[in-house]
Length: 408
Figure 1: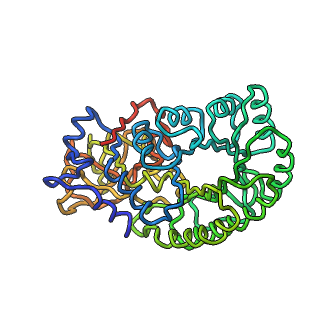
Figure 2: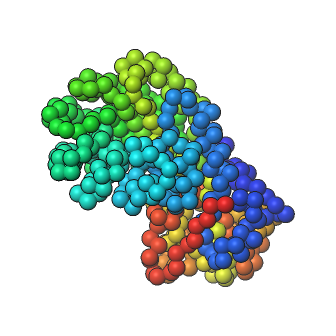
Figure 3: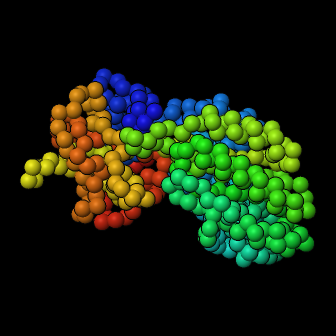
């Protein structure tokens, strides 16, 4: 299954793409303006159901809010997942506004401020320690307020995960504490009034190779087994990270989730149960949960021919959807799947390039793509827009208005 195949997950009504049962032209009128992001509640729910069917029932699903912090999405997921992971005080407030219990919220990320650590300790969430300095600050804040902080140690493993879009473990990293330094830290924490729950190991993101993720999970369990032997209390928390990728381009193949599920079953029934019978085992996912449930909709404002090349100008651009422009981690720029949403069933008759409204040549949403004849006012729809869209884009660039977001 390729990235373009995911288009089929959305409904088509009267020749128009539909999100949440609404044809895209009617949805645009409901939103009141373009561009906008629309997220399909049905697809979001179905993605969680797929994970529940495929992964072991004893695995806890955690949603990494940084992938899409829209409050409506976080509220919807609060009844579907087991926990949340946040990476800022803003995300923490969003999580605490949901019914999710505070002790099922973890706070990760380097360079947490003293104010953020204080908020997290006061709220009772689990802080994933990223440095020795952070550990000292947590102890000091807990002593000052008479609160026993809940912590896990984020470990920078001594192995790297191949094929990840962004590597976040192995070698020198700003993330986590080098695995060889963890035993000394645990020894130092032994006399402190602090509740050390366990470990978090996250090696990389956006990986489509199931065999690589399975190997990483195996190595993580082996690493943590050694580290846990230096704990003074039984391990109660093991966050295996995630890194599950989604297909963005035509040649991308969807992740073999069944292979990962079988591997996790083997690990949980074997070494994890043997060594850590009381541990809550967590798989932390962001992009994999929300990425394919969202679209970015932008309206055609103009078209022009320049020395034999046809340009289609739209009212959106990289200031809302940076990743689609190729400026968010792509080495070689490739096109996201895209359709003319109000005429999705019509055959392609022309080759065009879709450009945004910003005064920069970087604002390219699709290069030399075959589409039906495009008219002014048509709605261009980009897929795979549910994760790292609006909040991962330079929305203030050149002063254009922000895009709306709706969950349908």
